Length: 482
Image 1 (cartoon, rainbow, N blue to C red):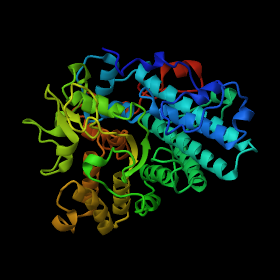
Image 2: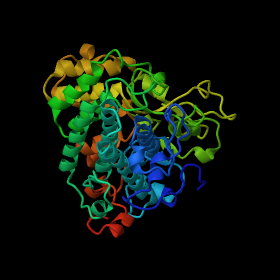
Image 3: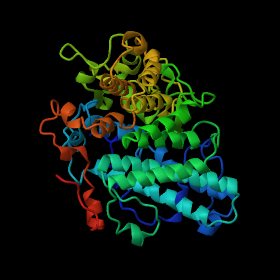
Image 4: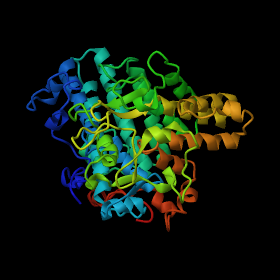
């Protein structure tokens, strides 16, 4: 396989949750807007790094660098793994390490598994180092200290959320002490969620309501509230999920739904948190690998495509209702007739002719549509059916579909919950693992996937703990079935 962005990432950064050299905190970021202050010299002692607002801010911005590197914990990297594991994507090339995801037949030494684990915990270490350094500092203003700690707490929570949903029980790391982290056992899922909640609640108290810089690249209260609403939803804490989502939705001065074509544009009002696009201010990793493959580019990029059962063809009806604008706006067919995700449509190349090729886009982590769907599900579970219908209809109206309030106003609870799950499927596809996680959290994974995944078992719903980590830390135990 040609090494475009499918390099064996564990060859790039090997190791585990260990103490990192201080210079790693200040990894160069190709993004002047995100890194507006100069990084302090690597020779600075840690006490000097956290001696004033400027150098402390530079350390914090270094934590964000993980999300800006296409090899790290990005939306595309999550989307292709979980999209193959679920029923969204297929893979049109013979690479055993990637086909394992499609076939739900992973092994513990799969390099793409260890890659995510390594980079996630590396970034968690960086966040913990910032929290520790700030807590021990006396030279930083209290306002800045609160904001910076809040951002680091959020990033720590965000990565643990993805780790726990991919691997199940995991170590919840809050220390930078290698003696502690190298011997940590796995924390039960329920306890991980409680710690995520605690971190997010503290972060919300510390963070400002506004974004710290121009754009929606750094974390504010609404970003943390968005993740908290999802965490509550996954735990079936319906009242709390509704409340947290309402906090974000109610901020109409900053957030509102936008046209389907605009959800990836920088700073659009639907975006709650975006990752700055350092790639010449044009295409994102998602755009390169999803849309880039749907244009006239070489077929070497035509690897990931949407499943026929998802899009529909002469054999399969597909999942979209007639007239759903999301099918026409968010899906394109490439020259080999593979249907591709087209939410990210910018890919600058002389081989492409689409007028959107040169537009600027940012990878979008949280957007308002998800908050409407979270609140709809939480309200339906509380038998607030009219309110839940209103939230679902906000999404359906944007998609050009008939409103449930008009077509089925007396819809029952279970039917409405099914309708909400359908909306999540067609609204959030190929975005940050939603479909894979939804199938697992609702207990529907085996029922839905077994007809298209031969031999699927409950054990296949968790990824294996990387073999390299089990060797390095004897206190870790492998997931069943691996």
